[in-house]
Length: 342
Image 1 (cartoon, rainbow, N blue to C red):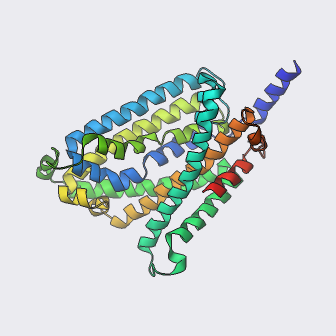
Image 2 (image 1 turned 120 degrees about the vertical axis):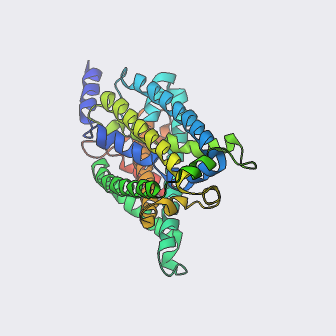
Image 3 (image 1 turned 180 degrees about the vertical axis):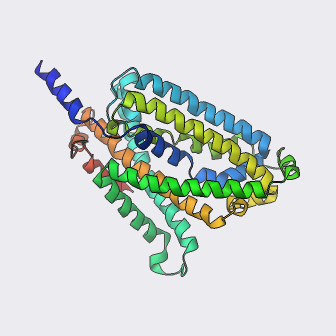
């Protein structure tokens, strides 16, 4: 009886404060609409042709939809706590599978923080004068970005969510600029020329592999499960909304690419979206926002996976990371470790 009361008290103590839009939809859509959209989708369209690109989009998004259905089925049938992907896997396949996968998930997301910050640094360096100066190196800018994101993650999910709203506004403005420029530069003849694949282009599955990471971003919203008011409702609704809207954006973006730029530009220039857009500089701002949003999502997700993993007491050396701070049990010890890895 005492154990049951303690368990109920723990559940009440760890009740989150984020809703569907802030806790699931926002981190998911910001990660899905990332670097692949801005820097690689044009290359895929030019190298595969629009017809094969649409097939790639159907296959890749079909996988994400099936995964979302499975996720929703689990989330609506169990009491979901913190830990995101790890928690759902461990409660369906067992702690042994969950523990092995959870360690890899934590390390992968922590390392990805560093990769995203380096991408942010490289994007910023290209638009700054005096690129040869020490303080204009990608590594220094990446370190500054990592410190800024660390402070947001340290303060908690509420602060990080406010930052993500700013990023979402920048991404939305970049996409509006791209679609406006694409409609102005629309050429039906060019769309017909880009419909088929070139003779000596890369293979279908190579291009599929290049694009596929774009559709895996919906898992970032799942990582926020412990900070949600109602995970059973928010996880399916927010994830399906993010996946559905992103599918529409990717399909429209592929069509606009094929009608707005010639094949040689799409295949040889990763900045083709900048040429198509009405305001090219807004695409650069979108790339910067995309890298920061992806890094922020990983900074929020990785410590929560580690905290849930430690709370299950699978590995004794992880027990200190089970402790959280504040009413939402913010995993600050995990944030420190993720920052160190990044």
